[in-house]
Amino acid sequence: MILRSFVLLYFCSILSGQTCADVAIQGEKIAAIGDLKNAKAARGYDATGKYVVPGAIDVHTHMEDGLSDPKRRDAVAYLTQGVTTVVAGNCGGSPLDFAKTLGGWRTEGIGLNAALLVGHGSVRRAVLGVAQRPPTPEELQKMKGLVEQAMKDGAIGLSTGLFYSPGNFAKTDEVVELAKVAARYKGFYASHVRDESNYSVGVMNAVKEALDIGKQAGLTVEVSHLKALGPDVWGSGPKLTAMIEEARRNGQRVYADQYPYVASGTGLEAAVYPRGAKREDFESLREQVERNIARRGGPKSLVLVAFRAHPEWAGKSLEQIANETGRKPVDVVKQVLDGGGAGVVSFNMSDADVEHIMKQPWVMTASDGTLHTFGQGVPHPRSYGTYTRKLRNYVLDRQVITMPQAIRAASGLPAEMLRLTDRGLLKEGYYADVVVFDPATIREKATFTEPHQYSEGVELVLVNGKAAVEGSRPSGGLFGKVLTHP
Ligand SMILES: [Zn+2]
Image (cartoon, rainbow, N blue to C red):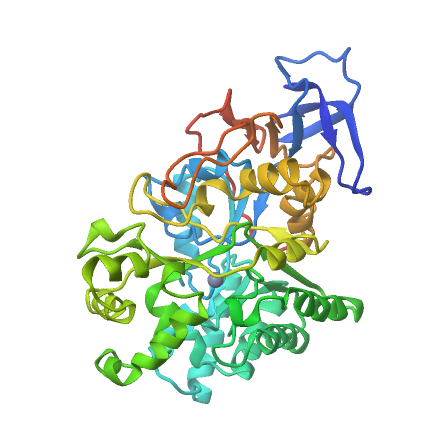
């Protein structure tokens, strides 16, 4: 196939490089780039006036279950954003049987290329349950064994969710020991840091801990969804990026990822209930819960995703539910936690911090999303619109960053962090993960109230040379490969 006469962005060397050229694809690979008017091809694709870019590499997802599910593994919500590769198993949560999980992806097929991190939280839970103590030497040995087996079977690195239970119960040295195992297999370290706000150690110390772990274990650090969470720490963006800049100047390999929204998505319990506290102690913890609600911007800033006992509350804020039912927000929290808990969309970031972080040349675009069952619940819209929103809102409409910066943050930069030498760029010999989009129409449609809507404007998506989306329609093909550590 030859893609003819389009605007081609080159990211190999110069950020602002932009040119017109043709791209020839043979089998799974890019065969040639240049003026190919006279070349013969079985078929051509007219991309006049469109952008042709490398497929996006989403380094921060939670798709590990979705990719194993026959109903979701085609990953249409991501392909329609132009994503062709993902990393799953973030924030400390992953399957532990890598041979089985990755084997299943290989034999059953997946809609895009995927790699899987081994999650520290899952490893810790398997060995220590939810015990709030350091492991014994034997337990640590067992945990290291699980990480080692995962790495041998193809894990791409180690992830932690030190904010969550049970990751939160680990001290730094425990994580260093496990990260050393991942380092031996050239894995990297991705961390949802211990505190993105001022819950405990504070966001600065939490990011510093991630840097220290990378330094001591000798591996690449990816700070997951870098942010300053909550009004108490708004304005910390420049301090955070300065600390990472300094580590980079000192030779450390450090990156961060970010989703282009001012709201995060998590569980209500994780957001407002003290870590490790028992449910029956709620009454004595009311003030702390109220403090944590305030920390996240108040009850209007926390919107329920889905609550089994009251499906009609999905999409409503704690404030709305409290007003409608004539109670205090903290009482609504109690009812939700007693009723099995619920996901929340949490509006807790400032535009200034989001934009400052986005401009850093080492910050990758990532969704932090997952493969939802279409139409179910009111989840964060990022799983449907991260990449298209960034292009529409931050590049085309508001010019916060340039188009080449945005494309690099989505493809070349994550490929560099992952040490992929055959993806992430449009280059001869590279895998043909290629996206054609129309700058006039590209946009996200998913909103916080109606998230289950595919993005618009992505016309063609090739995964390993095969059309996963053509004429803006998903083909349903499962053309992805499993990627492992280098
Ligand atoms: Zn996370």
